Length: 199
Image 1 (cartoon, rainbow, N blue to C red):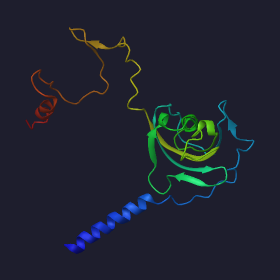
Image 2: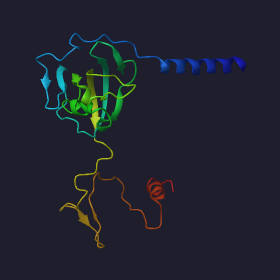
Image 3: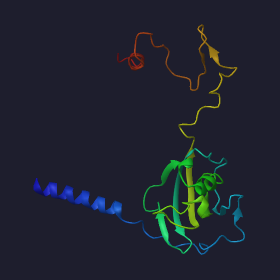
Image 4: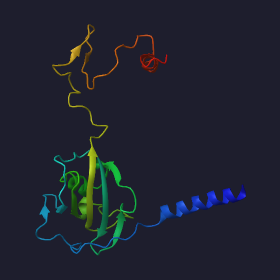
């Protein structure tokens, strides 16, 4: 019993130490100091270069959830962050630095792009954050519509909506496979169980 407890404790300590270790260093690209003349530039000052073409056809919106692999360097070649040692990172695109929000919207799924993000689109000199222009290699794995995004017809029921006698408008988004409807006095869970023949 003591041996098992010690083994479990040792495993937890090892996992904690691994979590606090820095990501494995990734060598900086040759053009880390400044964007090349061939890089595309936006009005904001963001520069980028396509590294690998994607297979997607659409671009993420500014508040979509994106899943990416990435590595970031300062222009002196020092890596300060990377996801390559673990799972891809997933986050809302409007919750990151402005250069990421703008740059990832240029991409499609499957694409890999290098971003040169000026300081005013990055951390703006905040303490404990990398200073100056930052360089990121970003691979956009996938993206999904933000769950907080309201439907396009939220302001007014569309003309093709169905209406009940009391005036409630509704629209079927995904047809169901059941044949019975819940009764006014039962919970939806009980109605589902009844429809499955278990209640």
